[in-house]
Length: 75
Image (cartoon, rainbow, N blue to C red; front, side, top):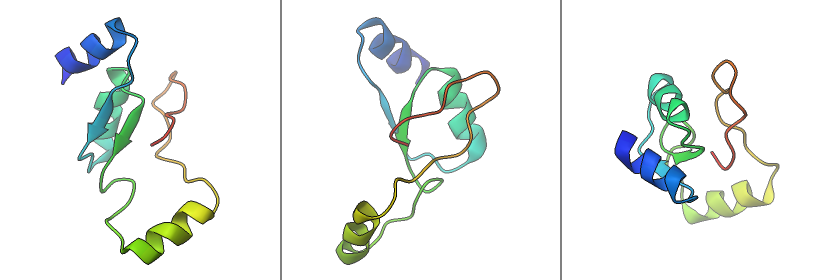
């Protein structure tokens, strides 16, 4: 993961981590400057009808950023 995050950073690309299940995993990824992620930590799979309602509602926020780091976007 460190190599992929560093490569994305060097190329000016956004890296999306998948399968984030715990806060320690999220902190580790934020430490690698991986700003985007998805997984059970943020939301469980939902039926299509519930996804539509979720997308129409207010924006979701992820876990708080680690000390000294900007908030993650799109998490």
